[in-house]
Amino acid sequence: MSNFSYRAMNPHGHTVRGRMEAANLDDLELRLRRLGLDLLHANPVRQISWQRQRRISRRELINFCFHLEQFLRAGVPIIDSLADLRDSLHRARFRQVIGDVVKAIEGGLGLSQALQRHPDVFNGVFCSLVRAGEHTGRLPEVLGALTDTLKRDDELAAYARRIAIYPAIVALVISAALGVALVHVVPELARLFQSAGQALPWQTRILIALSGFVIDYGWLLVLGGISGLLLARHALSTRPALRLRFDAALLRLPILGAVRRKIIMARFTGLFAMMYASGITVIDAIQSAEDVVGNTALRQGLQHVGREITQGSKVSEAFRKVELFPPLVTRMLRVGESTGALDTALANVSYFYDRDVREAIEKLQASIEPTLTLVLGGLLLAIMGAVMMPVYDIITRMKL
Image (cartoon, rainbow, N blue to C red):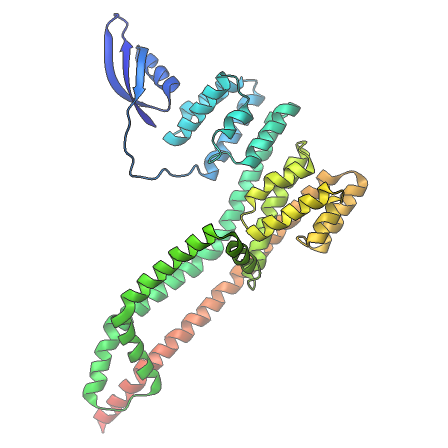
C-alpha cells in the first residue's frame, strides 16, 4: 500500500488537499469517489521502509485462482472480476499487485502478460498455464486446475513440515536442557565432588570437562556455527558447481533423500501433466516446470530430458536415459505414448507420486518418534550415570 498526496474537488466545487493510502492511482480515485471527491492530481509520497515485505502465500494464490474462476464461470468480465477481487483483499501488497494487473489489462495487455509483470508473485508455470487458457478459451478450467495443483502443493509442503517439526522441537528442548545442565548444574556438582576428595569415574570426568569447555568457549561455538551457516549459504548461492554437488548429496541422504526426491517429482509431474493437458507442448512444459523443482541436480536432469526430446527421442525414452523415474513410471509413459493418451499417463504418474509421498512420510513419521525416544533415553541415562555414580559413592562413604 502506497501513501499518496492528492488534490481533489468536493461536491461544492472547492479544492481539497490531503493524504491517503491506496494500492495505486486507480484505487485512490475509487476511494476518493466513495467519499464524494473527484481526483484532480496526486503524487506518491516517498517513504523509507525498514521492514521487508512478506511474500504472497500459496493460500492467497489459491483463493485468487478459485474466486477468479468462479467470476469467469458466472460470465463476469475479467476486469470487473479482478477489480472485485482487489477490493476484497486484506493484504495491502497483494491488493497493489492486482491493482497493477487491472491497470495493465486496461492498457491493452492480456491477463498472462499482466501477470508476467510480477514474477515474484506469479511464476513462469502459472503465467504459461494462464496463457494457454487464454489461447484455447478454457481459462476457467485452467484456473480450476491451478487451484487444485496449488492445494496439492500446499498439502505436500505441510507433509514436509510435519517431518521436520517434531525432531526440531525435540532437538531444541534437548539442547536447552543440556545447556542449562552443563552451565549451571554440573559446575556445582564438580565443586561437591572436589570437596569430597574422591576419585571420579571416566564418565563424570568427561561430563565435567565438557561443562568447562561450554562455559569457556560456548559463545565461540555459537558464533562459529552462525558464521559457518552464513558462509555456506553465500558459497552455495554464488558457486553453481558447489550448489550442484550439494543438491545431489541431499538426494543421496539415507531415507530423507528418497522422500525429498519423491516430493519434488510429485510437484513436477503434477504441473507437467496439467500443462500438457492445457495444450502446452512437451518441451515448453518441461522448460517451464524446471523452475519449480528447487534442486539443481534434478533441474539439470530435466534440461537433459528436454535436449533428448528436442533431438527426436520419445518422452518415455528421454526420462529412461536420465533415470529420473523408476521403471514402473517410464513404462506408464511408454504405454501412454503408444496409445495416444500421454495426458492420462502423466496424470497417473502424478497420482503415483502423490500416493508414494504420503506413504513414505507416514512411514518416516512412524520411525522418527521411537528413534528419538531411544536417543533421548540413552542420553539421559548416560548423564544420570555420570552424575549418580559419584553421588552414590559419597553417600556410601558417609554411612561408613
